[in-house]
Image (cartoon, rainbow, N blue to C red; front, side, top):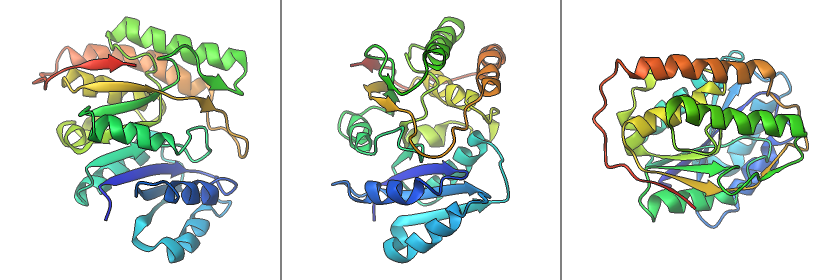
Amino acid sequence: MSDSLVIIPTYNEIENIEAMIRRVFTLPKTFHILIIDDGSPDGTAQRVLDLQLEYGGALHLLQRPGKLGLGTAYIKGFQWALERHYEYVFEMDADFSHNPIDLLRLYDACASEGYAMAIGSRYVKGVNVVNWPMSRVLMSYFASLYVRFITGLPIHDSTAGFKCYTRRVLETIDLDNIKFVGYAFQIEMKFTTWKWGFDIKEVPIIFTDRDKGVSKMSRHIFKEAIFGIIYMKLKSFFKSYQPKERELVNE
């Protein structure tokens, strides 16, 4: 049994999914994996089912009928993880833009250093992005600056999708009340965690754009994030939080 679950949403990741699963299972710490597949027509879910014969109870699959949004996939995964008593729950992409070896660093930040959330940050130590066009780097970087300006959230990479949550964070947040489904979901989860006063650490990573498959990013997704945070900030004025001990460290 493992205390850690890595949630990986997929849509048409047949070129990456087997290599990603095998790579995670070679790490010196045992992580379980939950794949949440949104009806990929390319056979992604079937490949996971085949691998379950090899990895047994360490590899899990939830299949959904179609593309229902990144946020709803993660919420479903969080609820699944809480029901099964995992202590550390990770978000990670299937396309190797997040290096699986960094799971160990996120885990250590929470399990050894005591942080409630650890974020794999592209921007806490400058700009650490490989193979993105400059226009996309600038759009992502300035989106994070904008989020900090509007919300006061003291995080350099507010749209980051590589994270570790402790169980106590996911139990405290009202997951059914998380509204966004695109990349604004990533901002909302960090903002809500911070508003509850949980301690957060940004762990510097190098983000490498995918070599295989097709990116799911679009300008529409970024627009949702940019305009959605104004609504999110306004809504927070009408919610009562009972902050936990707060400490945010950037290293």
